[in-house]
Image (cartoon, rainbow, N blue to C red; front, side, top):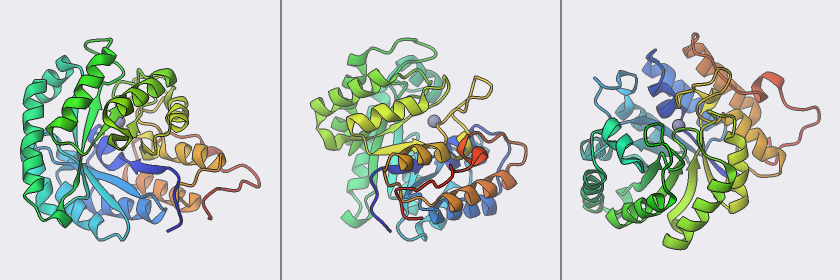
Length: 312
Ligand code: ZN
């Protein structure tokens, strides 16, 4: 694999599929994951360890982890909502587990039915379980700061609260924290400011990635801010699926295909091959024929004489 400047973490199989009511067959998910990895996507969040009765769309996550683990070089990530989910995840061995903590406590209570203290307690217990494993089998544990840029319930989320929660996540045992614009409220100034302040507080190695939404059309502007400040991992979803889009024409999650174009066109290597990425989109489109896929680049095509930074 050629060197990579910016790592794209594809969250479509988790964030995307969890908000679509149609259940994508396991065989189709495997084919999609294989196609994404084949296109050069270095990290894929393949699912979430939530009870099947809450999210039947993601009931096959364990099988998908086992499948994805067989793809050489791919970082296999999963979401875990709590200790029980983390135990199920550890049984199949992902490389990375992300646990969300809503900086807005109202959101935390409504979504996970847990206070901040309860979530942090579970994270400390998860840390204990990870550390009980042989060093080679320990996944990276990331605490995701959900609603960091604003909350649909509480409105403004104070910046000091974001910093406080970042500090507590690391103290509870997270290897790293991630900034997450769950609600699509973020602006580029906030992205730069929050990143710098978390770095100042915890060190640069404790924050490398960001999860952005395009709910109000600011997704790629916020990516530019993330690049300028020096973040190196960007979450995105193929076809922009998921992330609860509210505005017609606007995707929820930022669109992987457009993100790859933004990065490659300014000389940043993603390791992704465009033709194979568009093929992976066809695999997704065929598996979800009634779901709208977003993204401009796949429709417009690459510009004439376009030269990507990654050798194609
Ligand atoms: Zn999202």
